[in-house]
Image (cartoon, rainbow, N blue to C red; front, side, top):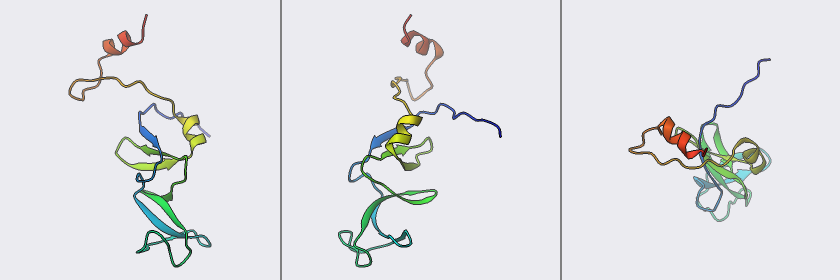
Amino acid sequence: MAKWRKKPVVIEADVYKLGMEDAIECIVPAVRAFNKCENSNKCKTCNMMLPVIHTLEGNLVITEGDYIITGIKGERYPCKPDIFHTTYEPVAEVKTLHNQPPRQEDLDSSCGP
């Protein structure tokens, strides 16, 4: 099988805090299916309300410590901390004029001698 390397793409991410979710929904543990509940404090079906993010793959549950990533097209999805730290590293922000890509000479000069 051929080997592939992820292209270096800059993303935005923050550790999940209450309020970053798209919804708080009921999940039925036996079938792990989501139900829409009118009362976000308590679900009559299972009493389990969980924060979720709506993704292209469906609703994904967020847990404490997860990173919420915003992708290059504005899509959001959760990522477990161990996967996040294995996959991503901090990026120094490069200031640009009018959202234009930085010039190579600016990048070269910011890297030191």
